[in-house]
Length: 538
Image (cartoon, rainbow, N blue to C red; front, side):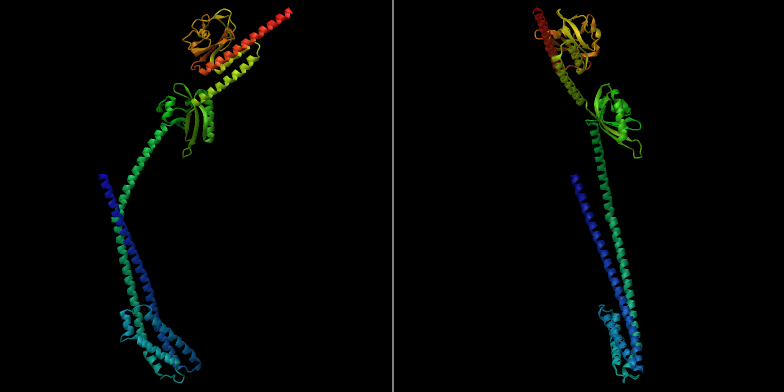
């Protein structure tokens, strides 16, 4: 309820201020419009007054000209000059009558003072001027014989000339006085309207704009606070997104070559805390085996300002290695300094493992094909056994790979081929299979068996053992011919590796190939001996 009441009050105040603002603007507009009207009226009045003064003064001059022309007509003795004088007098009469009619008809109502001068005694300028012009027109139209100094019209003109000039001087003075009075009145009105307008502006500023300014500042302060809060929230959200990004993010100071910022994902995957990573040299982040490639990537980065999807290896705190894809962008300082780089490390360990598995599978398939082709064509078992042991050693990343044959004595094995073991072990005297050992388990199983070296015996000759500390798993498979077991294949993997089902199937396939090849060679040898015997008998 309180919030709603506050909103209602704020709305009321806003409406009140808005109404006052509109009223003040309307009042100012009215004063400005009124001032413009008064000023325009004053300008028009001054223009009319100036024209009236000009016309009245011109009347005075025209009256004097009429007197001069009348005197010239009455006293000229040259008939040739009479016509031009008559024409000039007639034109002057038309001009003075036009000016007189304009003064009386074109400027609206006359002022009482001017009206008294024109129409009321004792001046009665209108009547006197008309009689004066009538007499001048009569003189202009009079015959040459009637023109003399005793002409009635001439005498009237001469008698009234100075009186008319004096009266017209009064008219000019009256028009001039009224014009000056109108100007003073206009100035007073302008001052009054200007003062009222200034007061209205002052009132608008004090009672409208000042409250509006306070409210505007308060609103802007609230908006600024809201914007700052939104900015802080956005920064927190961005920091959360940065820290919880699935990729490893870190920034490197390119001058010191040290980490200046990283996200939580980087610290978690590498096994450090963020404080431990901050300040760490960039080179220590990479595995020793890939630092040369990392330096080449850094060189490219400094030349181009960015690198994209460079595959490297990062070293964790515990010494383990993870495969990463590096992308980085160079940002220079505004003052042209070395700046820093924003780097993204994407963990591609799973992808690289998959690639290695695919490559390993391809090598296995290629090995099966090549060994199978060799076993179909070879005439002797030892080369095939050696190639088989070597292929197992390479494709399974083994520590030891051995191919053994069963001797004529039960449970005795001879090492026919091996990789990773001393050469003295190959083709040495047969050894008896230790009960419970990996070889014993494989021979009794007839298939593939696996075990950890610590769980079963690994003895080959008397008291000589394989180095169990260097291997993690061993697995073996019996080589079976068409009738009986012919031998044994044993593989011991490096520490950290374990045989997969695919590895066991691979070992079984190789054992089967070797068993088929052994049967074929034995059959060929038997057939060769039979043919030789028949040849001797025949």
